[in-house]
Image 1: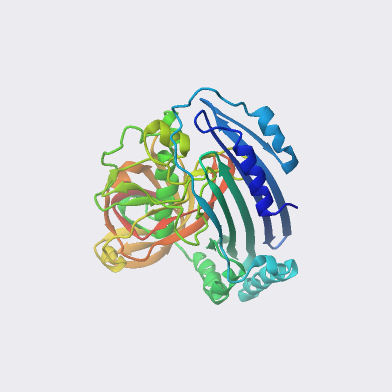
Image 2: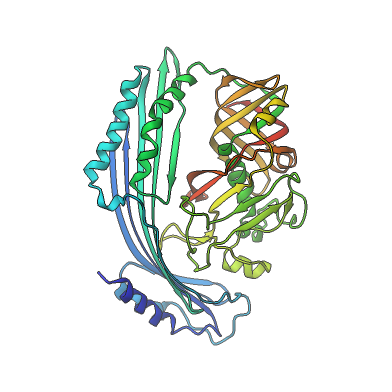
Length: 456
């Protein structure tokens, strides 16, 4: 096994063969170890995976790249990736920088025996199973990843980041008579095994939330004033709105937002960001897989669309600035424009004020499903539960609720945003049905004047 210094030297020597005056070149070393433990009534699944490899690429009017597993195959780059003698005027120069940084968790999962990790999952399962006989199938999923990436290019980038990520998902399925329902809990971030410290004292509430769903009523159907909790706000920011902002979609004429830069797309109250530089969130990192320093992309300011989400080439073509959104699932996957931490900025209202001004409406909680429609701008997202609002008070617990319509109509109808602290929910996002990367999304509570809802 080669040391970081040895790998870096090899990558720099390879990069030096490609002159930036004529073409852009970069090379990425990706090493990831991952563990997934899932326990249900019928299964206990343990998947341990390690992978390591390299991907080199160059831009000569179009991308050419090669991926391989072993460092001894670095010579293949020189034979597979051509050198250009013509200056490339498309790819904007970004200047080199250096970084060697590691996120240190409080409790490093690498120092915990796998048997102890399995036992922790079993303990949670057993607690929920014993809590109430109506909890018939507790589903517990624990995942951890340790990602190490080294990046070098011919602009002078010399970068390394080591990032641990853990997630816990808990779904206690409850049954009473013929009724089956559940709530769920999800947590994750750039943290270690200490993730369980924040969960153990919440297990009773997690169990009771699922049991409460057995008595939940069906939602109203029609157009009503609604409030979205941060989970649902995040679904809007990411699924409904964010995918239409990905600049590769814009260049393919597959975005309903293509011609709306500097135009009104939302209420004056709305400020929306994508920011991979937030500390310790699941979708955070120090640099993307193109060596761009992660930054804060102001997507919507006071309702006006400011920018798209870019990688190096889309930013070059559209005359914008890349903020760190060129991402790969691994060295063996393609690089695409991808979101990171996408969210609505908190506002000025309290949740109590927002509820008190609604005579008959619905609060949608716990985002559960979202469908992207970057071409048409359609909206379809589902909450796992909600509450009816009657005469300014939160009343009946409701089963899942589907919100549909037009993304822009909903954004323009926002008339209040709560000042609660920013809340982000961890998840995984695919480009289509593959190439998954860790992300988060959220915000605070937002209120919409009227929107179309129906039982989910």
